Length: 307
Image 1: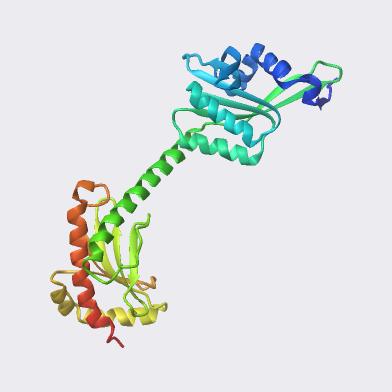
Image 2: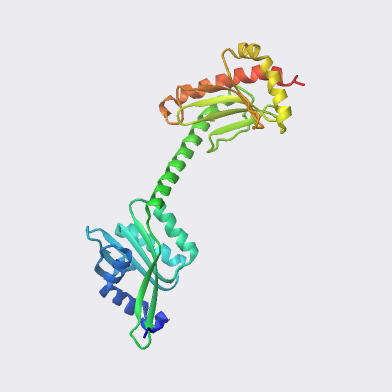
């Protein structure tokens, strides 16, 4: 005969969270360790952290501190704050938040924390109790969120992206400062985190841009009239004057136009340095601004008179 599993209210099993559940978990911590697949040795209950007290301080097989925070109710911001406070003060390498009802917002918070740091592993664990017939209730731990290899990779990528954003912002601050003293274009532009910055030429469908990549940079004119047929005609009109335009600019330019793309570009590329070469930024920025002065002086004469 097979019995029916019945869920039991946690307060029927552990009436008081601190006195009953925390004490029980301290004595039966191997059940939690088996679910998380980690070795946990309990060290101290109600560990003092300033004027607060952490539910359980334990340690891993390697001797690293493990922090466990219990909550026999829905997760809330107060306990999330406590978890972070205890982790930072106890220098824990693992933080385990046990709750009767984890909220989806806090599940995402734990995932985010795991992406953010490679030094601490965060777990959100759901606690339930079941019995079969008249049997004693048995605990059931379920990991709702925890560290994953893919999460750590995502976190690393986000950090790298954030670092690139800071670098770009710094690069544009320097370039736009130089630009302000040399040309009226880009005077209203503010430094941003993107790989390019552009401004209107004053004629609809034509804009000038600066762009920075990891290993190179460029300046250019974008032609975008909204319709490919019109764009092709405009680009070809400019292309007919290619030799004269490049002579005015002072060097060769790259001309890019494709039938399936609505925009066209005429640009100058700088392959001597890029975003990763901060020690070469000053020269690169000055070269790009000098190039932009020549580019705008050259094309301002042509685009205003195009048919």
